[in-house]
Length: 225
Ligand code: DC
Image 1: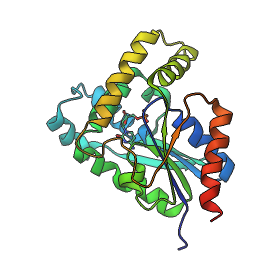
Image 2: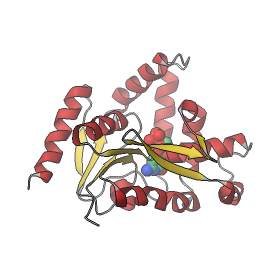
Image 3: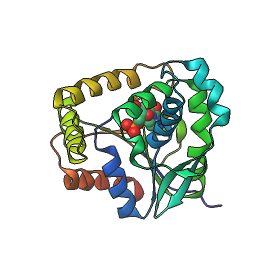
Image 4: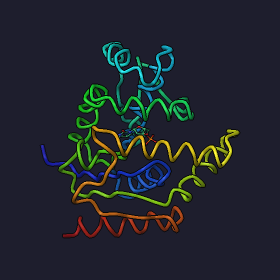
């Protein structure tokens, strides 16, 4: 089998990673994989069972009951839980918190590892997450770590939630983002930090189109070498 092309896109929440990843996937004709959706889905499962997000033992104990799959649909990965297609129900503040907490558990990360690697073995991918360049695809040909100031990220997330009719205030969104930054960055396993060979990309002052052009420039340099 010929080697696939892998682009790892890591960074904190609200950095615009997922919008950028979707646009890049379209531009290059690659498959888009949102790995956060896998952690969110585990979070949803655990929350629905009434288990606390920090109850590691209970969470690990229910992993064998979780049948999670990533299927390809229209050029992107879609998560299925127990055969049921997962959509926006994982995009709630509760699932964000659960996802961030369950993602600190080594058994949960190990549980989701092959699902992620498998797709990248068979397809050219743009994979967005926290540890793609460091753990999941250390051999990715391009690694980009996307950042933006916390205020810029909170503003974007706030606008997104408002559009969806969510009543969260900007202050709540900002506080939630600060908590999640620290929780994701300071964990012992696969912390959300850039790979040594990642290109750092701060898009604080850039809109969606400018972010896409700048990223294409970074990637094309590698592709054309
Ligand atoms: O990208 P996101 O906000 O949907 O991710 C939700 C949580 O999942 C995030 O707070 C940390 C965790 N996560 C992770 O640990 N590793 C990944 N590759 C993707 C997400």
